[in-house]
Image (cartoon, rainbow, N blue to C red; front, side):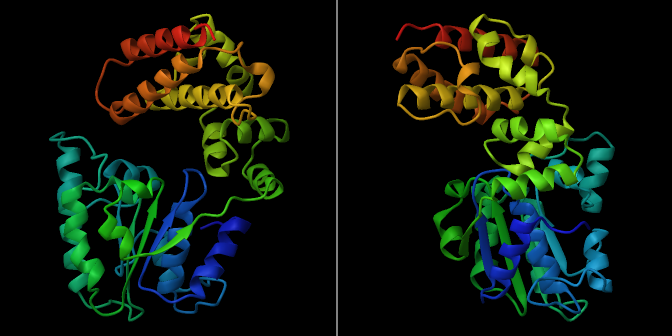
Length: 331
């Protein structure tokens, strides 16, 4: 496992110095909730931990790094587990391999039941056990309630770390039983250095960080996905012309996210604030505040269902048409 970014390492030290059996790490996406949660889990399970975290060299650290630690239970949507290299349960993997169903985008109740059974077992390595939940808001109400009792009365040396990018969606009872930690935003110089260490071209860093709203994980994701920063800067005026070209190969969720950022910036400018995701010169002329507000509400509703199996082409056509109407409305 590569060394943690400086801002994650700092937060790891801060949290390890405090007591508590359950943490809720929360903040906007792209700030490293998952990485911080994993750093805490590694440190709690490490054979030779220090105030700075796990040693990174002991058998326990190696077991975490190869996704095989018997005292670590990871609860994630199956789509994210596969993306991050965590193994699925034998039954779940068989169902997916046999095409009986697709990987779940939510944390399944069956996985919660396995976690509850895990909580009752004895620690295999004697350093306690850890349950890591990410993104915690992907638990539905049934799954969250299944976790609640174990969270309230953990058996033995059991710790929880929940990481969320939308903590307001969690049950209040879940939030109240965890110590909360708001993720820290890195300094621009830290984020720039980290992105360059991960192969992002120096000439692209500033534009990618702007597109990501200053969130380094999201900026790196854009770079790895091949986002053309020139195309990003041309996006607002292209949409005002009704040109869907810049979004042609984007997944629907990414397209809705880009439109939401554009709408945010236009509303910010209308309110006298500076844009966050686009340069001022990239934005089209001012549109109607009422039309932009209604467009913003529509995008929020669309984001809730964007991962459903709609026709992507028709969805994109509708998104671009709606954007054009909003962007060309009269002030």
